[in-house]
Length: 86
Image (cartoon, rainbow, N blue to C red; front, side):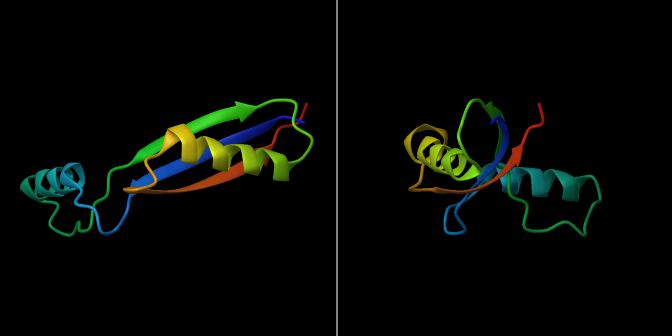
């Protein structure tokens, strides 16, 4: 079975987000004064092929996030897995 995976990565709440702060400041300068708590992160989309189950896909994505795609010390992540038809 093939799966589509969407991974969202954000800095942990306790980590300073200078890029998010810069975006918030820029929006305020453009008179968007109702914007607060901006966070800038990463979005990764990938496909996994030939796996036996969604559980196996989840286990593989978890391992990818821990080993390469994120820095678990400073980042949190969530992901969604969708079974592809075909």
